[in-house]
Length: 112
Length: 256
Image 1: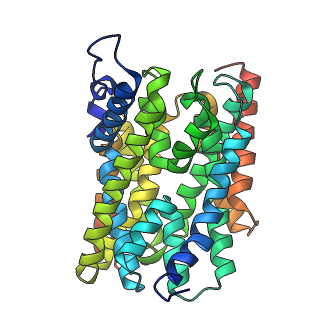
Image 2 (image 1 turned 120 degrees about the vertical axis):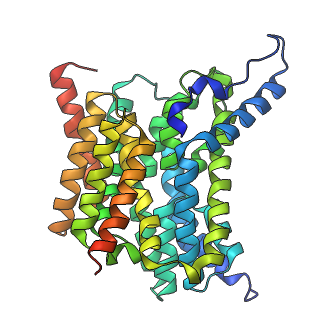
Image 3 (image 1 turned 30 degrees about the vertical axis):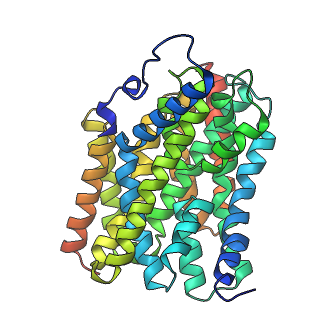
């Protein structure tokens, strides 16, 4: 193994494989299930709930530089974004802009 | 951005009904690629990967390695875990386990996407590529953009959509990698905030049924409780508990 290839081998073993196994499992489990079957409706609700958990974790216990922004600022920003999305014709773009603006403003006002 | 565009605008009208299939699947791929750049996720991905590019630079990874990780992993949160954990010298087994636990969402995502992608003549092997491309951006936009399309065009459209999103990610990676040193900490923080913010509003917009809305609301409440009480496998448990409770309410109400 040449030293240039070692980081790529690590990437495949600790990054690609443990991630991809869930997608492949999804292909196997999902064989033959139909769009309006009850199982699919349940599975989609589970997928939405897991995504909700990812949202909550990235906001409450965030990675890297986001952790330096105070928790209350992060919570207020995500609330502002959601409120803007609701008020402005359910626009995802409006929600993103409002949330980001609130986070930056809060970060400037309350530096950690 | 993406909201103002009707989904139909991304689909070229076929010139004649006798069009050869290979040509029409190339057109569907191109339509998907173009749709990706009109989606709000193009901006989200550029921004997110500027943040990830800066992170990779700071921890001493090369740009080709980062781009390979985007192609192979194609999941922002998992890439952040790999880069920051490897960069701080975590044990390989620990990194693999953290990625494995964070990626559990792909199982229900792929399972629920398959019926939308499959047509009468779809082979199992046709689904391998879209399954690999499944990520929050592509999953959310597929439920919005695929239903009006004829079934035989959905897989190439979806592949084009995901490759377009990946290109946006690569553009962001290059920018972030070279700007790393000059990015203020608050800007990097705001780029990392793009992921939870965009996941929340786009999932909310796509959750048109009672079960999905409840699953989103319950998941947002249950997950912090499980994390607070240090329950292991919190992503899986949140999914099963909140998803099943939402589904049960739907059954009891007899609603759709």
